[in-house]
Each structure stands twice: as C-alpha cells, then as structure tokens.
Image (cartoon, helix red, strand yellow):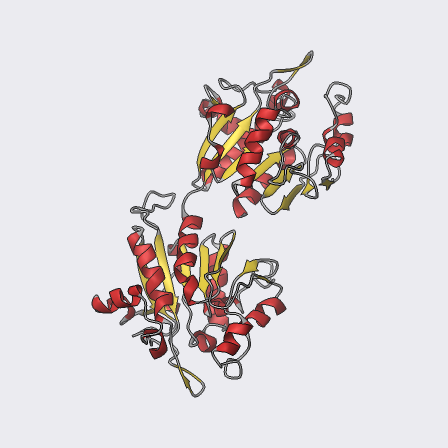
Length: 452
C-alpha cells in the first residue's frame, strides 16, 4: 500500500507496534516467529510512512522459525530485512514495558511460538487495554492467540460475535502440528463465540470487523497490514440533509440535533466531515428543533461556532458518495419531501453497493425508500432497521401530513422494523446499514456507524 504519508487524525504519522513471540520452542518442537508475518507488515507500515516499533513478549532478539527462512518460504520482505541487518528484530523491548495506548495500530505477528506466550493473562490484558482505548488491533496466522484471554469492557470474550480469520484446523493438520499445539486455534475461537471466516488452505484471507483485523496464514500478512492501516486512517463522513423547508403547508426542515449530534461525534473522533443537502445551499432547520424543549448541547455548540457546516452546502448530486466511508442521512420532516426520490435512492444504492456504511436516523431512512441492492430488490428487504415509528408520528400530530408512514413503508418493502418505546434511544445495525428511531438516537447511531 503506497500511502507515502499515512497520518493519524492528529496529523502525525500513524504509530504502529508489532508484537512478536519470544518463544523459540513449543514443547520439544523448535519454532519462533514466522519471519514474513513480521517483515511483510513491517514494510507495509514503513513504506506507508508510519512510525513502527517492534517488541516481543519477553524482550531481546526475536527467535525466527528456521522454516520461515527456507528456500520454500522466504519472501522478498524477509530478504529485505536480512539485507538491512535485521535491526528491528534485535534487542527488542518487552511488551510489558510498552504503553499500547501510545500506538494507533497494535499488530500481533504469528509463528508457532505464539502458542506458548500469547494466550496468557498478561498478553490478554494488553490486548484488552488497546482495544478498549480505541486502537486498531491486528493479528495474523497464529497471532490471534493473543485474543484468547482478551476481554471487552463488560468482561465478555473480545472475539465474541466478531468476524475473525485465523490459522485453520485443516492447515494445522497439514503442517503436522495438531498434536503439538496446546489447542487448535480455529476451534478455540469458535468456542469463544467468534465467527471464523475460513478460506481455502494457504490462500490470502484477511478479515476486518471494525477495529479488529485478522488473517489466516503467512500468505495473508501483507493484506492484514494494509487493512489495519486503512482502519487506522481518519474516516471520511458525508452527512446528507434535506433541502425542504415545507411539507405541504407545514413548515419544517432538518431536525438540528440529527445533524449536529452526529457531526460532533464524527468530528471529535478525528473524521473528515462534509455536510451536504439534496439541493445545496443553506440547510433549513426546523424551528421546533431549536426550541427550549428540544435544543441540545450539540445544537448550542454548532450555533456558537457560527453554524458554518450548515451553510452554503454542496448538493448531493455534485458529491461522489463512494469517496466517503460513511454516508449519514439526517432526519427532520423535510426529508419526507426530497429523500424518497429516485435521485436519493440511486445515491444510497451506489454507496451501499460500493461497501460503504450507510446510516440514517429518525426520518432519515426516507432515503432508503427508493434504494436497491445489487440484486435490484429493495435495499431494506430482509434487513433489520429502526426508523421514526407510526406511534411517534401520531404523537407529533403529523400522521395526516406525511406522504406515508415510514414504519409502515419499511415493512411494506420487506424490512424488519425494530421499534422501541416512543422517544427512547434505539439503534439497529444490520451489517453496513445503521439506523436509528428518533432524535434521541442520533448520537448512538453515529457512534455505531463508526464501529463498522
């Protein structure tokens, strides 16, 4: 990945910590780290302009599995490291002496030595700390041994419910070490509740689940590093607002919190945020959303800053949605006029089919009405979503003024609508589609979109 100058949201080079095993033996089997699983990622990160540090569990020179440097397995990255004197692999600091919170990416290299010193309480605690601090966590081949003792903030196994790739049980059998490893890694991950994504033995298979990136085998090392680097780069976010100030005779517009709340969630996380509207120009804000009853701290913050992002916006048709990682459709009753159109539907379809995260809150899912999946069917068909409910529409007295009830329309299109009590914070994730029920869900919807 020739990024040249990968920068974190701070503007400084991305900092990467590569962690290696210190174990040269697994029982009576001579082993260590697999060279390509350190060297391949090392040069991806270095060539990408990152600040790279290599450490090991116990510190000192890293033991390299001799097999990984045999004629059969030695790579150009291994050769490059050897010709440079292998300095990064010598005299390394111990993992216990590193503060993982100082790094943007923590990458655990593999090799059978990891079977000895990665699945420990010590390493698990480091992994947990890094992940809970919002860092990108990556591991390849046997490197995911580091995940075995890692926990979430609520004490659950970190990998529970997450997609991972690891050295498979079939590959372990093919290298003849099934009886020598302490446990089969694929089986262990499944036992811990992970969704293990297996490819054919020895094929390049890297998987990204939010900030957790993992790979199946040595062939996947470079791909995992590239994915990790992409995950650590600041995300580009497009917030789309209505341009309609009226819904029939009813004065409306965008609901301020549904733009401002997400805007500051994204901006405060270092994202590059752009606000546009369907027709461009200044975004009409529903006066009710800025009343004493509904004005939020996010609204006040935007007003104090001069509301610049909401003025003179570009029109959606002049935006290339595939240039963004997240496309967020804000709500407000104005969306009932200009979101359920072929134009907006086409933009949503294009973004979603390109693998982008599509998020929408309250009436924002009006943008989904004319959107289709790659199969030409309604995008929401068979998907779980949240949206402004028919009960909530009744409670605000606009049932007879909206063109249709959004909850009913979503059900008609084949969506599974998950509705909570009126005005409660409710967000739903269905792969890369994130939706929220009402203004109270705006911040949660944005936060969830950042995890995908």
